[in-house]
Length: 359
Image (cartoon, rainbow, N blue to C red; front, side, top):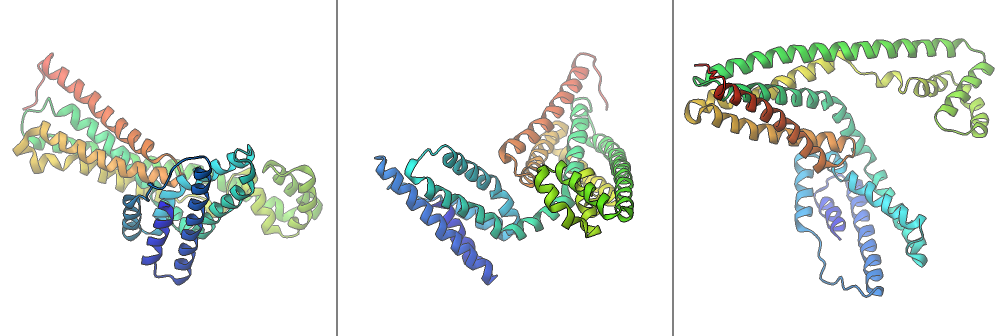
């Protein structure tokens, strides 16, 4: 019922006429699914007349659609769609509802059609995710490392807060350069290895005769899980086109094609810039508020900012892989705050037991 209301609400604000009609169609599908389950519940003696749709879920979905776009919303809802498909599949496989098995299969196909409708929007968002994955990695590192550094200094540095600010900037600048260089070198080395392998495959397939190229393509298909008989039947027709032969063999032997190779410069740029953003997010409360609430008070503000930033980072990471959103967000926050707590404890022990202080 909630899904039906969500799709109807999205249709009301959608400007693309074709997509609007698709959303209305999906809404009708969900209404029919709800009626089916209501029938099953009534036959089982379960009263579902008091169940209403979630207004919060509808408002939240339309808000996300307006602010972050349909692609983001699709990826956000994808894990629940996958879960629904899996549950329907298990019910059908086990014939759990007996005479309703055929109807369940129809509903399952309806759920699969949801993905087809949003495939283009989801692919656009996945391209966006590919661009910001390095950014999230860099920002997360900046948040954790600089927060850990300033947390260790907060109980030791008495005054002024600018000392912690300076220390944070030094750590942040060093980390930015280190992360950018590391990202570039790592991506460049991986790209060079893959380019060499892909180039070797291209040269070999361009110069093989049709029989040897067919054998190479058949082997590639076998590696991709296609049976010996089927691979033997389709390999000859695929092998007549050298470009198709290359692509199949590249994906089989290297795991990707040339188009999917990462850009080292872009990886370094995103990683470095967002590491610095994460570092500055941690540092900024000290020069702005340190003289009013002190170093420890500023640290608390930094912790809140880090928790928010890591929650967003975890959200993007989870939906890019259709993972568990709440679990990933909670883990990101816990790891960041755990590192800060450890270094804060070290700083406190140094201050209290060893009488170390910086003034």
